[in-house]
Amino acid sequence: MRPGTALLHPQRLDHLRRSARVTTTQWRRALTWWLGAVLVGVVAVSFAALSDKAGLLCTRMVHWNPCVMLFVLPAGLALSSWLTRRFFKGAQGSGIPQTIAMLHIDNFAAVDRVLALKTAIGKIILTIFGLLCGASIGREGPTVQIGASIMHAFSRLLGISNVTMKRGAILAGGAAGVSAAFNTPLAGIVFAIEELSHSFEQRTSGTMLAGVVLSGVTAIALVGNYTYFGHTDVDVPIGTAWIAVLACAIIGGVAGGSFSAILVRASRGIPGLLGRFAMRRPVAFAASCGLVLALIGLASHGATYGTGYGQAHAIIDGTEHYPASFFLYKFAATIVSYLSGIPGGLFAPSLSIGAGIGGWIQQFLPHSTPGAVVLLGTVAYFSAVVQAPLTATVIVMEMCDNQQVTLALMATSFLAFGISRSICPRPLYTALAERFMEAVERAPVTRREELKTEIEERR
Image (cartoon, rainbow, N blue to C red; front, side, top):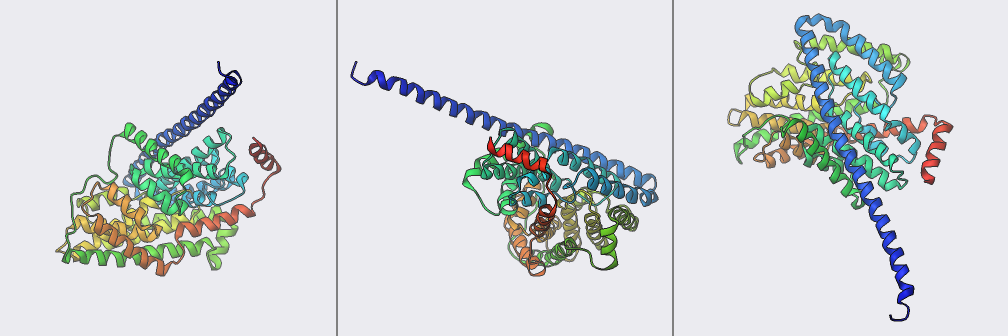
């Protein structure tokens, strides 16, 4: 035996033991992240199924007696507003602004409160209830906050104190929520980079990618490899057909930019007597919004109730043709639903409005394929609302399982984005997130929450 070998042997054993402990910890953490992503997929699929059933029940009520909505919507929105304010603070609205805000806030006691599992459960229940009552809302935005809440809960379970890793978990949860909600894994990744974080952090990219893939695989395992709007085999050849690109981009961009500008302005406070009424009597204001929604629904023969998924699908397939009044009524109904303060997203109604715009434009463009024009209208309005052109392009492309129109979709999306930016300089979700951050920072934090955060940071 060479001198020193006996001394080095215990050191090598200690090194191997430490390496084994590190490897075990890393695997335990990775498995926990993966379990969280799978859970996001399960919750997203269950949420979608329950939302669809709520929409069907609402349709049956309307068919039974359309006038019943004059009672159901005011009472339902008032109850939803009261429950949100009383038991589920932080659950109001889309859920995407909350997720963006939590990625940029330093007060993790507030993050724990907004992304609490209780808030996520309230988001699910009240969004489903809103769809049952006939509000013009979607489930996709709420799924983003729910996914972020689930992954944030798992990060707390692991005792993670690193700020970058905490935010990485929230980002991964939001991206996984989009992936599972639409069955569009690529869109989930692009959405996380372009809209949620506005950057790509190398240290958290692995967690995000794994979350998106696993939640998407879970959704496919539970409901099959479906496409949101089915398969469309249409194309926009270079030439006169591209007139549709310009027409859809201009009309969709103006409409989407105006929609965003209205909501951004309203987030700072509705002006006049109506604004004072909304501030002093929020539940009564929500009931008034419900009455307006019922009147819009009666005027549109029930077309504006719910997500608008059925109408959008029918327009894209060419099985139904709606007049221009459809997207105007849906536009108004979505604004009123959001102003009421109830939980619910903007994604599905925006896709429906965009499809309505495309369906209206295509009748004036006989040299273009009708289905392709509808897709261009959909991507134009959606891009103008969210001001995330890459996300809009990828979502519409994946939802229709059609890569032939990618170039036309991208051109329309970016043109509409530019027009929207000239009308509403601040992106909608970013502006709403900033307002939400201001509200969270003004809210008092209890001593119990402060102690809880201090204990977790010391671990």
